[in-house]
Image (cartoon, rainbow, N blue to C red):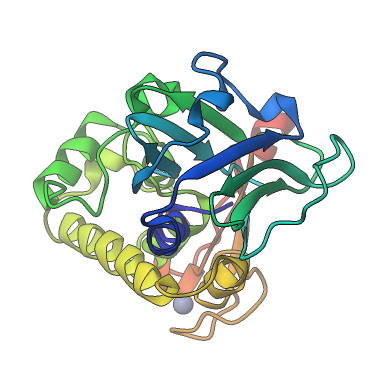
Length: 287
Ligand SMILES: [Zn+2]
């Protein structure tokens, strides 16, 4: 799943490619991805690209006041093509869900792998009309996101585990399962630490970890073409998706535990005083 750094890199890449271009047409191959019907996608044809931006993990292309907004979800991706194929898209015949063609013959495909189809595309007059954008918390890379803002969010979250607080989009925008694992490893903090107990030095460490982890990932991804972003993301991770492999800081085995709908990875030596985290989901089932 692309998170803030990958979507930010896509935004910067698309900004260069779409600058000065007009949209020729949008072809929809998988109708389930299109979540809006008014204005219709045909309303975008002929409009000039005025900007490309990001809201959390959402990508927003401004076309003369109308917005083509995309959320890539877990299996979605954007594939740039200098020259789009001439043949029309055949619904259901490929992972391509939607194609955006520009006035010079270039464009991009939105693709989705896997069986769970969650890729979402919206055509709206105002990005705030997209429910997932309207609900977003503050962006951690925004200048207004200070250590005090993070402190306030953690206090308001009470006893909730910090892992869940970091990746909740309505609390902080753009951080998902991978970067929340990475941030907590950099901060040397247990993923299960109750949010409201994070104060003082702990709060400063967590804030610094959020900033360095995301900014480093953005810097690494900057200038990387869309097709290489997934590889780039994976190569930069320290603990996420690396259960059983050595922690790059201390050499201990990275551990894994169930969390919500998936699992999280952490280093026991760096983050939990050497103790493995209990799988609370499993122990609840056994009671
Ligand atoms: Zn470690």
